[in-house]
Amino acid sequence: MIKIGIIGVGTVGTSVAQILRDNADVISARAGVNIVVKSGVVKDLNRDRGLDIKLTDNVDEILEDDEIDIVVELMGGVDEAFEIVKRALRNGKAVVTANKALLAYHRYELQEIAQDIAFEYEASVAGGIPIINALRDGLSANHIESISGIMNGTSNYMLTEMIQNGMSYADALKNAQDLGYAEADPTFDVGGYDAAHKLLILASIAYGIDAKPEDILIEGIENVSKDDVEFANEFGYVIKLLGIAKKDADMVELRVHASMINKDEMIAKIDGVMNGISVVGDKVGETLYYGPGAGGDATASAVIANIIDIARSGKSRPMLGFDRPMEAGLKLKSIEDIESKYYLRINVSDKKGVLAKVTKMFEDSNISVETMLQRPTSSDSANLLISTHTAYERDIQNLINSLESLEFVNFKPVMIRIV
Ligand code: HSE
Image (cartoon, rainbow, N blue to C red; front, side):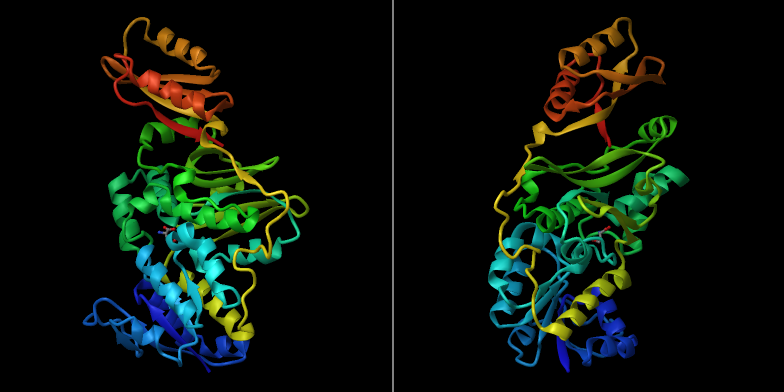
């Protein structure tokens, strides 16, 4: 029998305990051994979770319990979780976690500490989709050319509601929280950080890149408005929050941002809380992964897959997919060298000569306009909705700063990258 201790019995932890009980027949047959939850650590012992497992508020009762084989860390957060997971590994316990923030900062240290002890984290990226398994094992013969996808269910749910049902940003966020999709602090979802944590994990498995959130371009969906959604629609795009990793010779670019993508792309059709990730390998070509990226049962499904795997073999593969570094390592491309097409919404005073001055600034910033619309927003102001040809990130940022300083530009222009 394999005994589990769960640290953090919230939405996902409760689902893990319930599924281990409800699906015990298939789980024990697949694992070749019975798997039971021995105890769980919670902050509030008075809340009834409807589970028949022993609950405690003392983490030592799991970390120091010799009977517990696998520690399942579902508490979230970085520093405290890091200390707890390190202690679990040092006490020889296998670890399964869904904690992407922890891995975004400490995955290489954890790999070093874990060595041969199993450390698994399938649920940390895209909830129920087995993307870690696919990338680490299924595609391991390939050089990975790109990874791009919808990696945050909350923001995808919100954008879908805003685009398809005209829901306000605030209502969409509240619904996502009520449905249990959002992080404890939803700025992680709408600000792009949750997707960035996931992208960094995938980038390590695909490229061996050790980057932290501070090193990469991260933007969220907070500034997306109805005007942008309408422009996108008119020009054949939808707006999605994408995580993108792309190899270019010996450089890799990593970025998370709201993106206008062609309506015909498969990823454009992924709506609601669903996640969808495209991975292109040099030999396999494009592969696509689609499924629920958040929610208790979907995430618990991935957690339990890891538990079964450990119960079967008791061993760890190279945690981040590389047994040793590649001779010609890849480097992270700097943010300002990233190239993209851009959409800008510039709210201006509707006066003579303004358009000419704005377009002159594009020329001065070395940026070529592709399409342009002007839409009045009041009797004396208008939105200029402009898309560009491919330009450098450094040039677009300079342009935005210059535009913002103009007296007839009413507020900082909003920019969305066209992918
Ligand atoms: N808050 C996350 C999301 C949950 O919305 O995708 C899964 O990581």
